[in-house]
Image 1: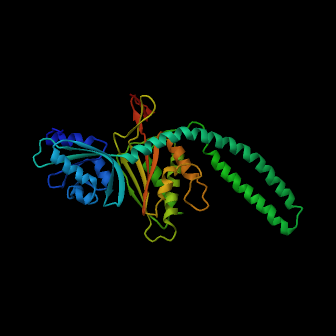
Image 2: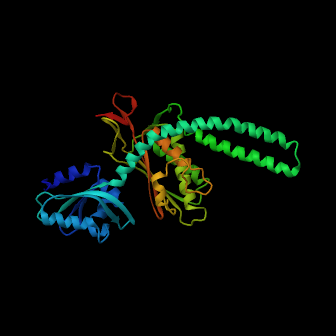
Amino acid sequence: MSIPLSPPEEAGILAILPLPVLVVGGGGGIAYANAAAETFFDLSLPVLRRQRLSDLVAFDSPVLAMVEEVRERGGGITGYRIEMALTRIQEERIVDIFAAPLGTASDGSVVLLLQERTNAEKMGRQLTHRVAARSLTALGAMLAHEIKNPLSGIRGAAQLLETAVSDEDRVLTSLICDETDRIVKLVERMETLGEGHPLARTSVNIHDVLDHVRRLAQTGFARHIKIIQHYDPSLPPIYGNRDQLIQVFLNLIKNAAEAIGPDAQDGEIVLTTAYRPGVQVQLSGSERVRLPLEISVRDNGPGVPADMLPNLFDPFVTTKAGGTGLGLALVAKIVGEHGGIIECDSISHRTAFRILMPIVASRDGRETDAATEQA
């Protein structure tokens, strides 16, 4: 099987595909890459065109063998769950690969279409977590209410005892008060995970939100860290709650700064926005969620342990000593309430939190939440 397209048609059709597409010439050089491939390999098209496929992947990569097999057979092949080690960014990804001869090209050109399995699996896990989170947050809200009532009685009793005990014992009553205050704060954070009132939403410029959070960070906890911005100036607005979106990115940037540490000499946080047309998630029935808006927070800290990544957004999961593990759970909850998903990729000295969100769409002149579309 081959793809019989003329060169202008090839470029036009391949460019609009939301999945990474490469055209590998007969000599092994990259003849073409679409926008999704530029993102996948973290290289621009002019740079990719100066590379060979063997420069981008490990020397023993199954991808190289697939390209040769296509040339020998003259037909298309598909590989599932292929380990693809990217040499430039030192990262290994699991992908499904479709490879086929390109048109009637006599030079042995092969087109590669990549589907990253980790992204598909993460999206599915996010949607599953949303359903489970409703039961968890309802339980959390109920427990918070029931726990705070006796805590106030315990604290009151400790304060009364404090007036009637010796100075030596007063240390113990103060400890009781301090610990009850700490538990109350933890419970109040649990309450924020409960089901809240409907969000007051409006059209929000995400770059304004990121700039606001950046200024807060650089005047406080991240003053020693370089914050780099790579924004897509044509990005459309988000239909959301500005205050909650500030909370999301303040939490992510604060986590990044804490991961880098106060003594780092070359600490760096990169904020990136991009428009990814064609990104959709299938919900129940015929309902589809379109998530073309991508916001990324990347740092060069030590990274998240691999065994923690699958459950990183669950409550009480934390990598920090003394952490409560509620910050990222709250972030995931807010993102989910905005109709989006959040995922994390992490290797040594490169951790990226990527948020995919819907946008504002105007069909009849009014701003509406166009996240959901009926097929």
